[in-house]
Length: 305
Image (cartoon, rainbow, N blue to C red; front, side):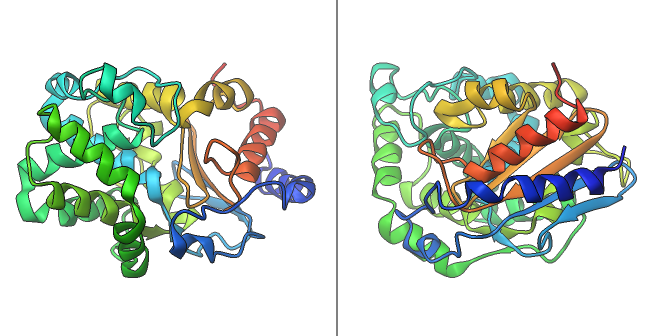
């Protein structure tokens, strides 16, 4: 299959969708991003990469980081983790407080903000002051790339304006489901969201989830086959917040979005994909990214269904 030709076709077909979404304005450092960007990278098991747009330009990965932190936490805690964070779709916006209250501080899944805060807390319990560094080292290992870091300006912007996340972490703490200091947890969480990666790096870093937990480029086992299956299933059912069902319906691949404009998607036993376009739809997912992935699975027939 000529993937490069297909990507070029997609790049032409998504053009009419520009200006239909909005960049994430509630984080000032993200509000200044040029909205008219589109790039898409595919990474194969042998390391071959296909792309359109500037696939080496880094952006703030935001909630895509939750895949990495959940992988780390699940690797360490196993099923014990599910006592603190569930594995069901929430059906609510990514930063909702409502569900937390009537479910006694147990977030529905690790991909909404509340669940990611509990996951961050679980990593602080293991690694203490080194929690963020361990997350960063894990991402460097998964992507086989040492040149990955976080953006201090975006981190500070999140700290200054992330009031909803402070509310979430305090509410969870009130139910006893945050074990460490709120500052340690929130700093770890905001830093992981501020990590900068390119579509090429992100596609490469997700290959282990397409290959039963083993990085096909290095043959390194990152997570067990069973846990890789669980992560993929959560990406399919919960990876796009309250639009997860719509994404599964239109695209038909496990995926995870971030308000920075990125989406990663997994084609089991074949490849990993990352698309970047910063204009978001009402649910906080990349509008053009979603369209591009729908076009990709339609043209290639590579949906899991």
